[in-house]
Structure formats: structure tokens, C-alpha cells
Image (tube, rainbow, N blue to C red; front, side, top):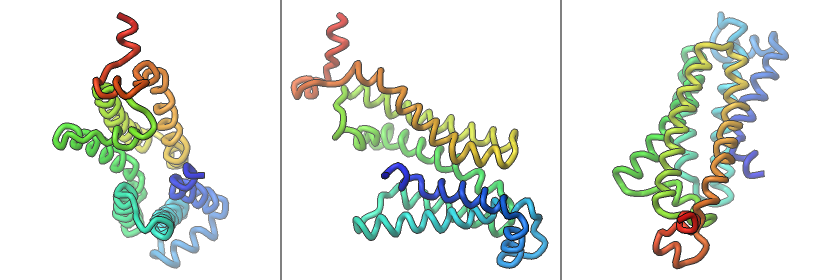
Length: 216
């Protein structure tokens, strides 16, 4: 259920895009009425989906605030990026702004992970996961770097899809492909992390990898 909630803006974007595409005349009439006359009909689905995504992101934050009275910083960052790039898409009637949104977010996430680790000596991946698994410090560093590089690569892949495939293909990549790649990347780390899990407090304090010691 939490995964679906986290993906709320993505799900709304996907649904709005394809519903608008299924009713092209109604979608075109809507955008020409509320945005500007003369907008090409083929832009209507992406413009409607962009507006719906901005609303969904704001709604997501409102729900979190109502339940917890606190909103994670990443959600605020995500809303800000969506509002700026989505707003630019609506204002200039150009989908390229919203298409660059995943790249902007992924590169920002990667930058935050790197800067936090290298400059502030704070491993954000460790802070998020230390309550679930215990690993040696060097493995946490590897994991943090791996996620940072993954986000950079995923952002670059999004750019490639934008300029080499159709808009519909990009929508599928953004809403299905990107979450799937994140899931597969996280799942692929399982065998590596399982080799380095710390089993007791003494191992945690010493930063000792039991599996590595056993191999020697």
C-alpha cells in the first residue's frame, strides 16, 4: 500500500495521459479552453497529465501532513521540481520540461547522496536502512555510491528515451520502466548485502565482515 502511495503522482500521470488520449476531442477542447486556443491536439494528453501530476503531488503532501504533521524533505523537493517543470510545460505548451523532470530528480538525488557522503560525512542510505540491516561501514559507503551512480545513469537514460522514442514510449518508460528499474536494482543488491550482514553487536562495533573473515 505504501508503494502505491509513494507512486501516486506517477499513477495519476499515467492514467490521465491515456484517458485523455482515449478521448482526444474532449481533451483538446479542455486544454484550449483552460490554457490557450490553438494548442495542437496531440499535446492535449501530456498537458492534462502534467496538470494532474502537479495536483496529485500536492495532494500527496497534504495527506502526509494530515496523518503525520510532518513531511519528508524529499517529498517537498519532488513537489518543487514537478511544480517548476510542470508549470513550464503548461505555460509554454512544451512537453520537454515535464519530460526532463525525472532526470532533474534523479540527478538531484544522486548529487545529494554524493555531497552528503563526501562533504558532510553523512551516509543517507545508511541512515534510511540502518534500522533494518547492519553492515560494515565500507559496505554502506559502497551502497551509497552505487545508488548515487544508479540515479545519475537513470537520469541519463531518461534523456536518451526522450530524444529517441515517441512521447507514448517515454510515458511508459517514466511510469513503468523507471520504477521497475529501481526495484530490480534494489533487488539485485540482495545477494551482495547478504554476504556482509553483521550478526551481533561485537561485529557491528568492530565493523567486521563475518563472511569475509570466514573466507580467509
